[in-house]
Length: 185
Image 1: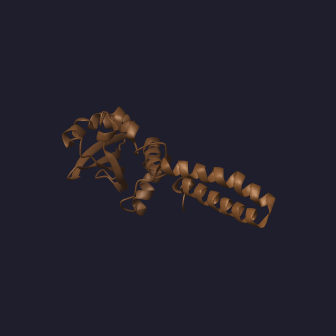
Image 2 (image 1 turned 30 degrees about the vertical axis):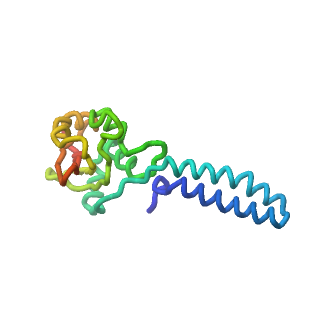
Image 3 (image 1 turned 45 degrees about the vertical axis):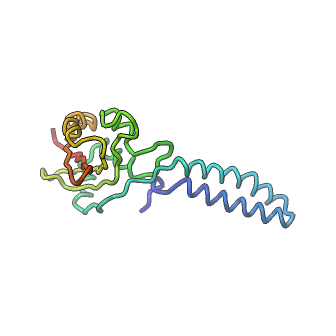
């Protein structure tokens, strides 16, 4: 099932605006003043709004592997409000931000300026070694060293709230997986 947040409002506005504008143009050519007004007075502004939204649109982060039935059951029973909110935020279209979790990364000291911050490239969910729910965020981090990520592990755990432990793992050159693991403590 597709959530409304996974649909691009910019694309919808562009489509509706284009259709109304074309209908208005055709109506103008045929001398139909009512459709002409509707097409131009609604179509052009909606088209412009769609274009503005499209220029400020950030697509959802890709899910790197589908969640198994066991993971979905653990998510239902164990995911904290914070983990649920993070997953929903990064898997929907965002407007007016340059990168997913950019403000979070700045607050955590993982890049003081936008150009050096890690970029979220995807996510997946899995069962942790302790048999609990785990949300994994994958970042491309060419300018922030893995040692810096390791230094921030405790701060990441505190930031993502109670009952969450953060662990980082280097999975490739400049690629860091941030594991947000549900704990019972």
